[in-house]
Every structure is written in structure tokens, then in C-alpha cells.
Image (tube, rainbow, N blue to C red):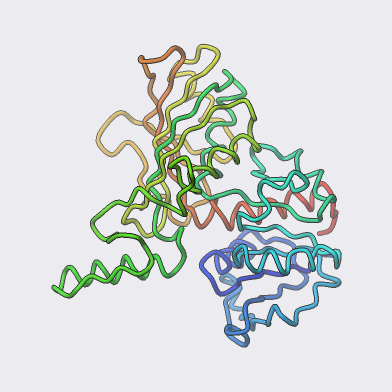
Length: 341
């Protein structure tokens, strides 16, 4: 006996990826419903490579009663309106938006990092999926924190346009084409031209001069990994279609060498260490697309602080940063609580 699963926001980049990963990982589904806004009602979406097409249902009229799990990939607005309704109907919500992440009654889960936190899901019947840039970073940090206790994290991100949705990808494509053919470059989604450029601005600015994306990395890392860790982040949008990269500097309480860190990361769940000190001996965003691993390269010691390390971290943001992590949460929920399949 399998689960009855709802994917909300099934026509978006992350929703489609959720459907693909459910099929790819053979998640035990008796039934899958594709749900979206009224403008997508009737549109067909693929259920992975199964050859099965799902007709989208209107979320405004969808009844969550009798459904086991709802994967929400529709943004904070629909999550605010419909996630509590689904939860009240007995359907466990796994939400990809930022809305519930810092709610003390909602667990924020990365299965390789804090699986035990899922046991608190019954308080709201909602589980939060972390920000894409946070998810890949904590997968890399967890085994190192267990080994030598991280005191401080300094991270600079290089985030792909797919993090801004299909409109972000379309803008990069359109601007790149315009530059090549000599047309006028139009800026609509991003604050400046993104083609052949980088923009040190993701989400809104806060009073202290940081952006909300940077704030998310700070507070989510503390909630998932350890509230005592100090984190500072600079988040940058780059002209890459899929795949987030991060340059991470770490300061530890205890001594740890680069070689020891490599050995730890080589065996860590969810991590793929590719760290050859030669031309091409590292992973870039192009190579991580379509893969669920968090790739680590360029592990080296930082001599400017006691017990310091620097590393390079790359992951497919539509997968581990969003859809895959949500499905892994569903798998964890099934193993520990729902007991079907």
C-alpha cells in the first residue's frame, strides 16, 4: 500500500522536478495529483519518465481530505492560504517556501543533517524545506561540525537564475540573445542586467544592509545545524541557468587538517568529494545539473585563523536545493511515521 501524494505548483520548475524525482526514486505512490493555480487548470504535466501525464487541478477547489502528503512548490502566498487547510485535513505538508521555516512549531529539515527534528511535525502537520543555498551548505558542514565543531562560517554564493524561477531563466536567455544580435537589453526580473554580469543582490534589502537571502542562510543554518554557529553571507546572482556554487570559509573550535576534512567528506551522506589539485580537478555548476549530490572541491587550510578551512561547494539548486530535499523529507516521514509502502 502506497501514499496518495499531492504536488502543489506542479507546472513550475520545482514542481515539475518534484514529479520527476518522485518517479525517478520510485516513491511508493498509489496516486499522484498535480495541483496548480486556476490559470494552469487542465494543463498536462509529465510524471517523470513513466509516460504518464497528469492533468492539473485547481487548488481553489482541491480537497486534501484523504491525501497523505502534499509537496508545496507554489510560493509563500499559496502556502499561507492552502497549507494550513491541507494540514487540517490530515495531509502532511512539506513546504518549499520561506513562510514556515522559522516557525518554532515547524521542523526545518535536511535529512542528512537533522532527521530527528522531523518528529515534531505533528505540532502543525507542516514541515519546511530550507532555502536552496542553505540546504547544500549544511550538507557539507554537518560532518565537519561533528568532527571539529564549527565556530564561524563566511560564505559567498554564486546563485543561478533558476533560483528566481522560469522568468529568471527566460531573462538570462533573452538578454544573452539580445547582446549577440545587437538588440536592446531588457531588464524586468532582476535589478540589473544579468547576462554577462553578476548582481550582489538576491531578495529584498533589510535595515542592516544585508538581503533577505543572506539572512535566510544565517538563521536557517542556526536552526538546522547549531544555534551557536556564527554565519555571515554574501549572496550573488550569476549568469548560470542551473546550479548554485558557494565559497565557504570555516573556523573550528578544534584542530582539523584539510586531509582529515577530505577523508570525512568522502564518507559523508549526500556529499561527493571531487578534489584533485590539478586543472579541472573540481566541480562546476554545469557538471552538477541533474544530480542530487552536494559536490565539494578545493578543500584547503586557511592559515589566517586558527583551525580554519576553505572549500568550494556546488549543487543543483532545483534538486537538492528544492525538489529532491522535499522528496527525501517525504521518504523520511514515511520511514519514521506514516509507515506505508
